[in-house]
Image (cartoon, rainbow over all chains, first blue to last red; front, side, top):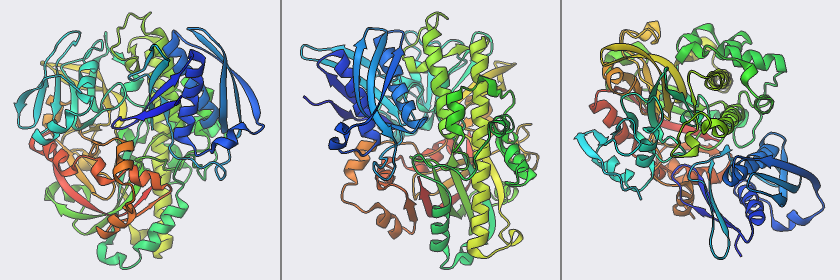
Length: 141
Length: 480
């Protein structure tokens, strides 16, 4: 199954993300965000990496997703730490705990494609179809 | 996509009737051509969404460069009553005080000779631009607080520019009420290394030549003349501003329900102006605004140094001076006549420029006889306009005008249609030298991704909001 696709938006970047479970949906959303930003071949994402645990809360599932993406973006923009894989371990409607793996960002090794300024709430949708969970998120670039 | 029906008011204005939960109607400045372009995006819906917010006064407005943003449309203007009205971080945008600065020189096109290419290379190599670039100034915690409080004044005191630069900067380059205590540690951290950097995306530095003068009097007052070499800088508050917006947005989303504010889109999250959270945001936003002014002051200083060195000119020979610096992502407390009464309002300009008329106190003394310069950069290669604010802006648009051309094509679409083309060669054929740190940026920013700048400016000119003073042609452009 595909993880995500890019949708059209006049000034920003809008993605549609899928996952068989909500956890997978959250993990794929982080993967989509980093794919938009950074050139990182998939074989690099499985090598031994540093590990961090991320715990995030929100008002509801939508808010939790946005806060989770925000935290992942901050690890990169604020701490210079590149996330290469992300696995949500626990997820409720109002919180998520995830194991993220990555390393200090090296610009030469993984060039930046697009700077994402922020994760927005605009047009945010999470819903469940028969087959899978689906979310739409707009990134401000 | 959008099903909202607009009613024509006149050649340049469309009424968005008040329906449902809208507290006021909307007005969109557009000619027929721009109106057609709006049908394919969501910006009309966004103008209607803004009209739902508490305390909005008169109209939810959109300038002719309006396009689909997140929450507020880009090109949106909305004013809120200090009593019962709100302030919205999304109505300012992530890039707080993103804005433009126009520098004039004593040089003419003839003086440049064959030196443009070397000069552009020097600017490109020495001015930090592109994603994640860091500046030459590393700030200590104490210095950074000073930047947030004093804005451009900090830069001038540190030796980057002259005191008179502040006279021709909006708000004197320092917004009142800035309180660094309201800025998070995360925002401070992101701001430490980025002062004096251009940034990425649509940010740029452009060398331009004055091609045409429309208003001789205003041009003379602004010190613009045909054939003169000028520089336009477009940049903002970088990561510090993005983080301030993000922090307060998260906080306001969390509390909007409790405050009893019903939001058509969470990105419109806001707080009452008369609340602690609203005041804290304004104090933090002012810090972001001041950082941006210090940033553009530094970029100007670097530009001047590089011009002098590369062209072997003394400061006197070069004669570089600041024509004006405007912000186009901001919320400001300003006074307007609302149905015969002078009222203080919080005006949000999200991708819109202040356009105050002759005689207004906030217009620099040397320009007060004609009005405030309104800087309108176009898309890459299409040059810029200098307009001047008119009295009509005070009556109709809360003293605001357009800020650019406005996108019509998404970045993915632009990348698709420019596949296999050499954008830098196409622009070179038109006489514009472009250097960009990313080929992706060039493709995303192709001219056809934007509305025609002439159309956008003509709407402002004909409606008498801000009138044309001069048109500048691009010679060289540095993109992030």
